[in-house]
Image 1 (tube, one colour):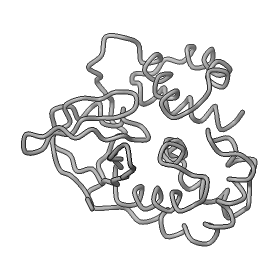
Image 2 (image 1 turned 90 degrees about the vertical axis):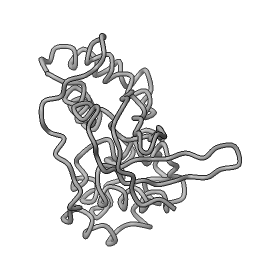
Image 3 (image 1 turned 90 degrees about the horizontal axis):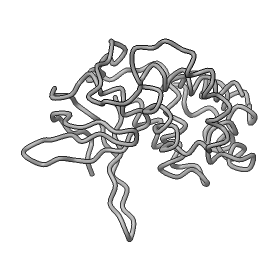
Length: 204
């Protein structure tokens, strides 16, 4: 089982990044791949979870140890799969997520794609009281991805953000409701547009 991989970011897409190490390019599915756009051709350390199924072996990447552990906690809940777990983590307000679980706020949890009332109740049942330590600790390998991003793409940041939302499982109807607000913004990166889109989706 992998803990982390250190390598060079060679490609960023709405659903995954490619991390090259020792001549091998690893496809890592992530909650928000655009965090790494400013790290193209730079060496980074990414924490890894490997999921093995009969028809596929998939790698999921995380910006630090804490995010990986939160993801594994989510996967332990019946009804939460790899994709819906990423969709939950895409919203950077992990403290808000933990608070919602502690407060048994099912309405908040059902705003995530793939999470219905039954699954929201199961999240509360399984994880309440078990996540507090994951909101305060930080890995020494954590990288600051808040800096200005320079993207290697020739289409708009808004388009990329929408594609990322689709990859996370948000429906066309949900995206359409917030798209006009997103297009009015003046942001400098896809990451910034995606963060704002996720914030608006959580308010709906």
